[in-house]
Image 1 (cartoon, rainbow, N blue to C red):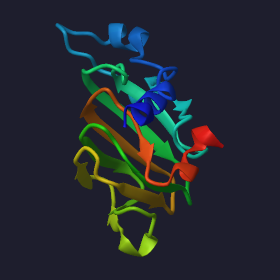
Image 2 (cartoon, rainbow, N blue to C red; image 1 turned 90 degrees about the vertical axis):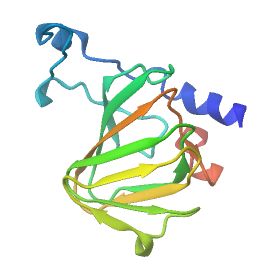
Image 3 (cartoon, rainbow, N blue to C red; image 1 turned 45 degrees about the vertical axis):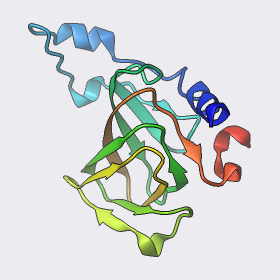
Image 4 (cartoon, rainbow, N blue to C red; image 1 turned 180 degrees about the vertical axis):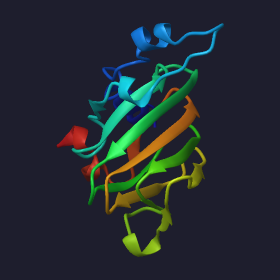
Length: 158
């Protein structure tokens, strides 16, 4: 398990942290406010190609609160995987089809539209797919990581 976590975190280490310039511009008495146009999107080496992340609060590799947005293109498939920490997901736009289990099975998902919410406990395998561009926001306490149920699904190994 330690090796899997190390591999998972290695793929996240180069991701952008909070947009500090925007955060400073909008800091009011310790509050941080960001506008959607100020988010910095980056590819995610630990997810299949096409997904992007904007880290709002982090860093992801430390035992601190994290908030990030994930943007998935239409017809995206996220194979079964799990995380070492709890994951809270809020759908901001589009439809995120989520299910629990050891393999991606589109017939066993719940279609979560804008405002939909899901909680996955640490180590609980889950999967997702999209039919349209979809943006979700995740909240957790790091360190963040992802382990695929089937190691062949991990894009970092391909």
